[in-house]
Length: 164
Image (cartoon, rainbow, N blue to C red):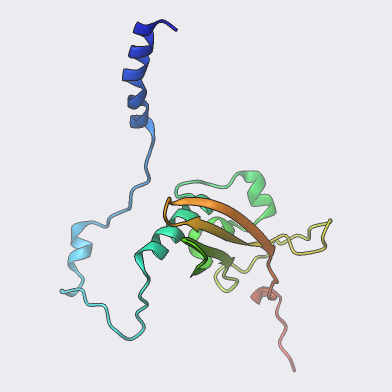
């Protein structure tokens, strides 16, 4: 490549970043926010304190697992329940691991997402639903590994039978 073209290419390459859409938080209209009592107080009872590096590790893993703004394909919706594609359908367990690693596990909350379209993996005979555990390096903010483990399903509420 000729040097002038290389320089021109190098100048315009950063402009490609302008086309990368970064998901933004949705804000309510100011009138709706004004209805809240001020000052906003967080009660001590029921509050959970989560360290910043744990929150960041959870967000990094969640953004990989269920990126904001993505929609499932029609083929995915044939095999899975729509709620499986919603971030709020998952419970999170996070624990500090060895040497700057945070372990983050996502498990579907079956009370929120009852899983009516669960299949069985022919090779293993296990339910085709997994818990995912991410190992996140909290020094470099990279995902080191992702492990899956079959989820033991509870019976969906729609299939429970009441006793006499």
